[in-house]
Image 1: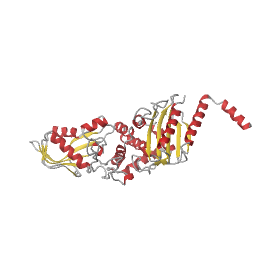
Image 2: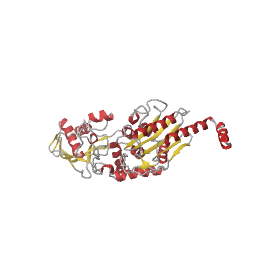
Image 3: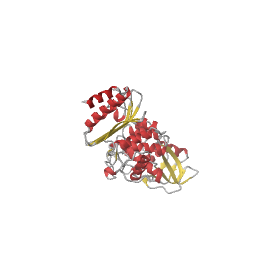
Image 4: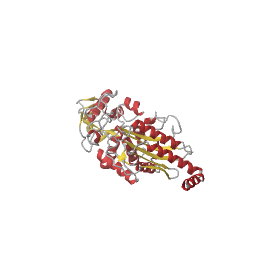
Length: 407
């Protein structure tokens, strides 16, 4: 009885802000109790540095697409917000005075996930590097006829078409990966089939674009690695990295994420592989105090794991870096766009929580930033395993609403 009275007296003398924080922690704890023993959460007030909630926060959980937080953070840090990927046409031969290119052309990919046709890139990405641009540049270089053929060169990456979740084969959730991707590996712009040989397919599309400009190509297109030392006849650049991570994170695009992981390895090692890319992303996170076990770039594999505490460490560290604005703007906005467009469409979280979703069978995650009515910003991570994703989302939304409601 005496202890209860003292507790009531202590509560009565709490400052308003302390009382509100205590109420918030109580609410968040109540929601997390409903999530089961295989879930965890961590919440920090980034404006004050105060820990708000630690619920089984140190246990690594399956990340699902929260893996993309690690991939996009590492990519922004590695390439910068304005970094781009180039796609080139190389010449193996010589241009004669009459406009005849005596030799072959090589279309060499640089890991650009947006490269493709002008109609496709405009429709889905708002623009990007295209075969039509390259054909125009080759035309302007004075080439009127090619005696050889157009080769597609994907050698900046390995030729594995998928990640570990699909045994490194083509996955329906990703499509065929290639250092020379064209229209994200789709065999047609309707998306009803995948390309069987991406570099050869891309070479054929450049061949078509050159023919459309009146440049005759004598031999049929194919795939091959370009010899070293060739001159660059034409090159085009991808959209900047801040745009690429936005195109990835808003819809949770697995294809972009897997290519970005390989691109990071390509930039460091000279050749892009999933395993090397995942290791480099994990190494970047570890240097920020956000250690994670990562095996791919997208989160499709259940081998991607980190604790909620480490995810928030990543979010906290990124909030102090120059790339923070690009990361923040890339995240889906509650009730507005991306994978959160149909969640939290009312209440204080709408428009004020930017967070990355993650879903696999019996796995659901939500991690990101919420700005409260008090103007304080909260960093949070909710990783739920062995749970129905639909019920998990309801609990996650209640947590986000509670954070955004703080005055």
